[in-house]
Length: 357
Image 1: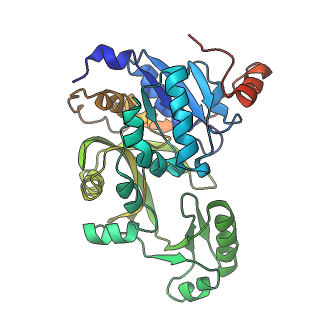
Image 2: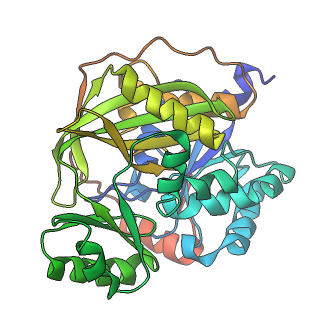
């Protein structure tokens, strides 16, 4: 078992540093750690020097450039070995859907090199993916909107014979767009294919309110704590910019059933919709990482990223009290000003000019 002083002195790398209109979760994770008593070194690990959070010197002690998630496991593994040697990284917290499976694949090798993770198995990550989600829900007895997997645009017309518009078109990794007509469905298909590749999914559109659950599992399939919220403000892309914590046992029970079915470890987000006609929850997606609104968990007395760090170092962490319901979050923008030399250094040297501390 790790002593408290061990995790307090550690060096943690956090990915997902963009904070534009569809923010990555890494900034919120860093805020949770800073406000949760973490006094170690925080390293921002970004795939692009234009990710805006890379210049949050109030959060990160150092920022390092890494490979794109699409480059695969070998470049990522080699770069992390460099960070272990150069920056003494002890733990890495990935926060992007596109990289979780890769991190899960190399986690055993990272552990041998002295880099901890706190992640599910690669198999579990794949089973919760959009293509496999209907099977997982059916096996677990959980409602899920009828979903069709498309490998060609010509399939859309046949699918629309079984589904009435509007329908939801989804990319294989991320992104969802409502199509009100067959022409819109075809346009969304091509856009999603260009961005995310095969397959594209077509899903029945249900009317109702959207709910999310942020979950942390401390061992395979066991929920350490979870926080539920209801969206009440969304962007044009359907991303929540405002939400409120809720105390709904049925919602949290669904998240717990999913975690048990997957044997999940670490953080995840379960996105649900409460069907207005039946009052039943349907799972829309399962994200294999903390959501961008995870800072809300710290604000309601249930700091999940901070608990993940402690658990990753083997500490027995007692479950927190039930999170406070009725607390809202509103997302806003922040302007960060820095010297141009910071960007130049990240591009040329792969790191910022100097560590903050």
